Amino acid sequence: MTPTETERAALDAVIDRALELHAGAPVFTASVLHRGEVFGPHANEVGETRDPSRHAEIVAIARAGAALGTTDLSEATLIASMQPCEMCLAAMRWAGISRLVFAMTQTRAPTFFQFPALGIDDFARAADNSFTWSGGHGADRLSQIYEGT
Ligand SMILES: Nc1nc2[nH]cnc2c(=O)[nH]1
Image 1 (cartoon, protein in one colour):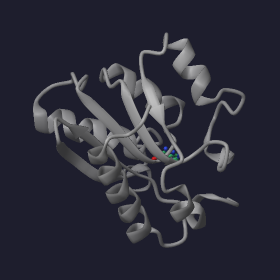
Image 2 (cartoon, protein in one colour; image 1 turned 120 degrees about the horizontal axis):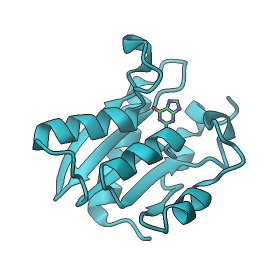
Image 3 (cartoon, protein in one colour; image 1 turned 90 degrees about the vertical axis):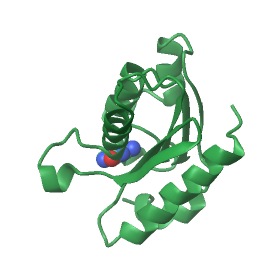
């Protein structure tokens, strides 16, 4: 899948936000792009909420759904600084999102995944390819945050 210009612009903003927030520990950011409107960037809220499920993508999906008054984000694209983890891929699917664009990849930063034997291709296949994705865009800008961790 080739990201649209709007998706690339939203990804650039997500990357910028991660770099702004970065102060040592890895930081993750994500947005939901829905009909040209960007919800985000939002950061991971695991630390402040003490909730291990509060990944940036979950926050972005929750905020977009709340703002739009729906759980149906089937017209949206999920945009993330890091390849979404297994939990976030499931949340994306529950929201009906079928387009995904991200920067850093599991291949380059494998430590952030709980099921390392499974790659995103495996998840797409297991979901009957009901979502398309494109990753690695701008990943070099984030190598200081995620690589070598
Ligand atoms: N993609 C992603 N990976 C993570 N690993 C730990 N937290 C996060 C997060 O918020 N997003």
